[in-house]
Image (cartoon, rainbow, N blue to C red; front, top):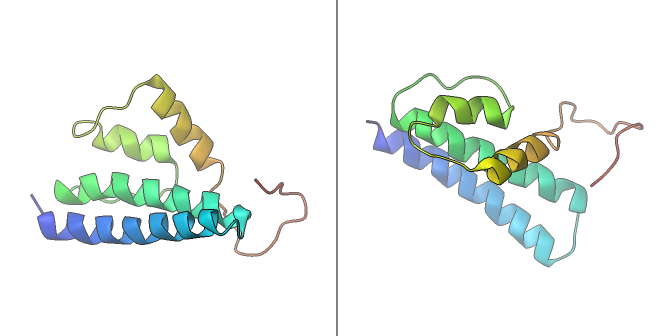
Length: 103
């Protein structure tokens, strides 16, 4: 068990979640809110891997990460569908894409 590593990951996840919450309350940068929430979920799931000293895979696909950590957390079908929806909000490119729809 690696509580220290897991806590570091969870602290980072809290930062992303807190940012999303602040932006939502301010009705500001709605396109970034979903990205921040995606990262929060991703990092929480990776915290389970860190806790078990498992390899942290380099992916942003939330269901893929969940499958590796499902011995620690069980999601029901609607929650698993939300992982798929949240994954769609991950942005591969840092620059604007003219064909990408904003949330």
